[in-house]
Length: 299
Image (cartoon, rainbow, N blue to C red):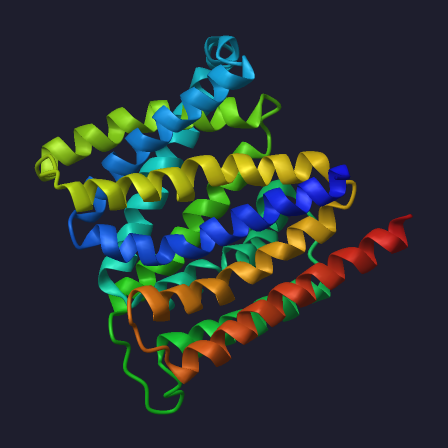
């Protein structure tokens, strides 16, 4: 097996697992409040990441990286896992899974727009077109296709889903400056974020009551949304010599997710979801093509 073939196997595994987590969110939220789910999932993810780093022989890097910039990890831990997953799970609690999934996926469209003022990146015409197409898709999904006579089912849910994209983009831009080991950095963010999650939970709610099914659902989210899948994706990028091809596989995630939502949750998929999601993915493709054209011009 070539390294590229191995990369595709890792990437496909990551895509398939990520495609199931929207359904897992809804199942887990039937047992926990959003903040309780963050606590269970983050705790699970920390355990999984520690085991992975022990196997890789990298645990000695944890203390070293934290000492180099503790304030950095305080910021990343506040953004992810605390704010991002708290806001995202609140959105999933209020919206049908298909809506929350689709709206959250627009983070990839928002990211280049935010990178212009913050990271001083150049704004390309394709970025603007991508945003217009993608957010038209958001409008179609949020209004269930009732464009001229619309009423949002849950304005707060839509606002939270879109806010989650802003939080994730903020985390990505902050984390882009990190030169340390990626898995170690993720573990440190979660180790810093866990006490914030726990303190907020004790201050506002109560600790979750653990049932076997609820615990299994929460652990699934921690393993395959936050922990193991992230490592699989990193392994895919590490083994390939064609990063763009592997990255393109991420476009499969929302379409597969909708299929899992219909099959696992028995949630009828709105026609508007298909149209809106197609527009969002079209916007992402336009964005990718624009990046490739710009790269060729700079060669």
